[in-house]
Length: 581
Image: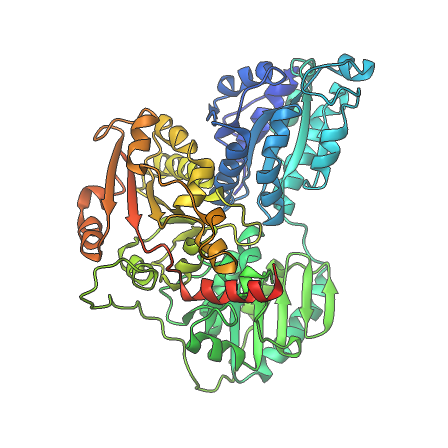
């Protein structure tokens, strides 16, 4: 997505803060998350001046989660998200969320308001410090979870450092850290640099190396009789979805996704077969994938939860791995050959394959179970949800039963799935929902669409970040929120301590929270409580509740048995318990 600078003309001089926020706007950022603090207040004045929206979160951790969710929606192009915190106390509160973005390859620009350069030079005993005169200790912490650290202590370097940080953030799809001292905010830099857009294209592969890798891959592809494609999260994070889709369509090879790759593939496509996660897969999917004579693995992240406790049974001798950093064909590694160009050339040169007719994936939406039992079970709800979802929905699932239950939900076309399977920070999904819903709202306004944002989170997880419901109401984001009321941390219970009190949570009156946060029933919010399958069906048929045009946040208490869990979660928890992790 090229940056449109035709209507803009920048001249010298320009304040550093203005340059920073204009650059962010050029790469698609429309809103800035964060929390005000005395070291960032002057910089915050530049947000509205430059046509950006200040979100204003309840705390920095939530802001980091929200920025993560915002980035996952905007990075379909070449975008990122941004948040602003204050030195020390603010930035450290955000570190957990930023670490999750680093772990899961999410591009977030973290801007930290610093004390003046003079105060730093003199080692003054300032508030929000450790009292030892060291003003670098916190940036050193963040350096471990950032792909670039830019300290804007010199106006002569500031523009270059800003450009480099934003570019690296987007190209590496990982967070960057920008330190902005309060006395540098109004220092001048060259404004005419803004007339030249940042180069956000991936560097091309060496043509000779790329052609060689393509030939090797084609050799094994044409020898295969029973190949499958397995798509994972890095195909999303490193902008390889178009190349992946084109390859799937042209090859006709059966395709599956790993849990973190949910949403990467058009699940209405006839060759789509389901979620593969080792022993956590349904039997037909597991047999089909593990019987393949060639697995074309695109963007794999082979973590414990993503592989159902490391129960993948895929031989490397039968695997081609495509990644952002290189390609591995069986045991031969080709570093520096990015998957995007390789996949594109394989598709363009792909001849007729010699695929034998064998077991095919079953791409059908499960029918609703007929049962006189009205209890809302995990086994019933998640397949039923697939029949209610609409094309282009954004679906966010929390660490726990939701993350695993969604494996059994068949998505319509163009659904975006957001989850945090690798980092797995409990409470992430509510904050991420705020950011995702804001990005969706901006896109809906820009494109005149009616895309919905839908959150599924457990009651225990929700209690960690419930305040962000307030931010959603204040910013009129209007997502649909399901609170799975099952009295505690179900995923923890299954791993250890099924009946122990440390896995219990206080039962809240969840439906009362929107009002406590300033929402007005019928005006800002609509609240529901469903306890039976029949009530779920009625809710799913309620046109006000369903519509993407509804102007209220919809908040649902969904009551489920305390000891019920998706089958995949039970298998993963059993494996984790055996490993004592």
